[in-house]
Amino acid sequence: MDFSFPTEQIELANNLQKWLQKNYDLPKRRQAVLQGNDIIWAALVELGVTHLLIDAEHGGLGGHSVDLFLIMQELGRGLATSVFWSTAVGAKALSLSKNQGLKDFLLPEIVKGNVKISLAFTELHARHDLEQITASLLAVNSSESEEVMALSGEKNVVLFGNHADYFLITAKLEGRIVLVLVSAQSNGLECHSYRTIDGIEAVELKMTSTLVPKTHILKTLWNDREFLERVSDFGCSLLCAEAVGLMELAKDSTLSHLKIRQQFGSPLSKFQALQHRMVDVLIALEKARSMAYLAAAHSSHESHEVRSRSTAAAKALVGESGKYVGQQCVQLHGALGLTEECVVSHAFKRLTLIDLTLGDVDHHLERFSKITLPENNLRSSYAD
Image (cartoon, rainbow, N blue to C red; front, side):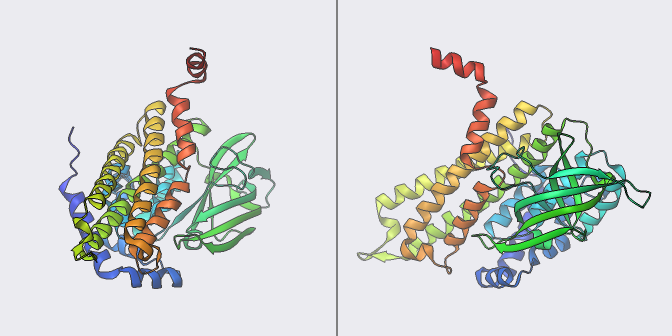
């Protein structure tokens, strides 16, 4: 099987890597995070990366997670935090919808960098179950001719919420799960911002009878559950690619540290026990890379079972590998690995949050088992 990428994608990723090395080292990253500046988004727009988010019909060049794999990998390797990921998932949801007017209006603006989207899928007490939703949409009578809906509820850990122009929100409408696009300027929206452990700005979002045009409720060919899973699986595949880049960064930084640090008159890299630990780190990284490739390749697969199984397996294994690589690299750095001046500490924090985004290891292991071993098979195996 050929896992090589087109030359154009490789060149674009290389250009992004050069920009990050020049303009986004650790001190500049720390300054951007503290000031709340998303300089990464502006750079991605300038480099033309946003064209990969959209299909050719709306002025883009891609729209598939395979097209974005190398970009997300480089963003991870560069410790780049940006609204790019959530905007990519929002653009995917729009592309899959039948809301032609909304697509014609927003997708070209995303390519130009004028529209950014944040995902509001998580609710308190829902754990990682995206179908546990209390936010609701109700029809109201409006004085205007356009039919509107009233959105009420709360969403937690809305990443990059302070940078968003629109929120993609999950809600219940007459018992069905729907995705609705809400302007960040809408009345009745309250945002309480804070920082996550990896420095990302997140918000707690509260909607109180927020009026939303009915045309902003995304309509699709699939049932509500499958549409939500398609969107979240796409997001998971991008997170897996970012995690691979983060693990590469942690591995390379640790290897460099072992070659430089001296003990008993020799570099630490000469000690066989530490060599074996680095080999284990490399194995974990390559396993994660293989599964991330699989998730990317199957993220748009028409078969619900194939797509869900691949994504669940990849997200679970990448989460396990990320934890292992992060722990090993921190330990091999010693106390230095816990400091703000060490890139490994930042990579480990980001890997931890990626594991908790759109379902952690336990959630996706359970999901994988339900797909591959239906309940009746489980019962018969236990009986045997």
